[in-house]
Length: 124
Image 1: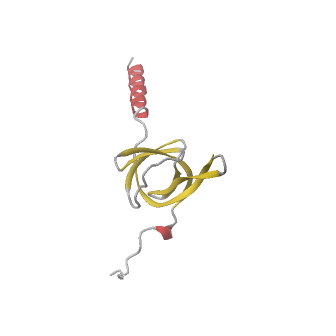
Image 2: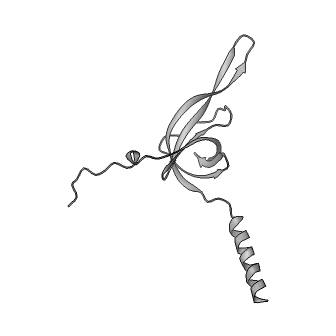
Image 3: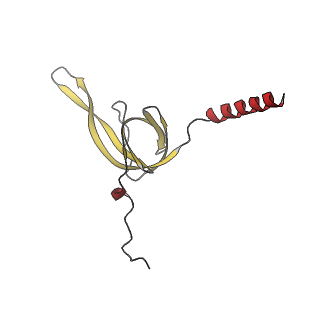
């Protein structure tokens, strides 16, 4: 009886932990570029549409993220701190009071040379 009660408690605890969802991770917007993400056909010519692409650094990983579709979304300032969650190939976060969702198009490890600058003062 005690074993089955302990097993039931373990299963319920694991279910509660698993359903809590992913924890937000801290990150910083490092760079922004405009990239082609489609074309709109007009009567006489094709109009190329641009999407915003950002690099977000979180700890030792840089994520390259892109708008899922062209929109009139305001630019996110560089060095903006964000709390994001990853869900498959999507990154969700809030910036400037708006909830945003971007596609993750790349992921790279941060090289040790890109870390914080070393102090120029000698160690004593």
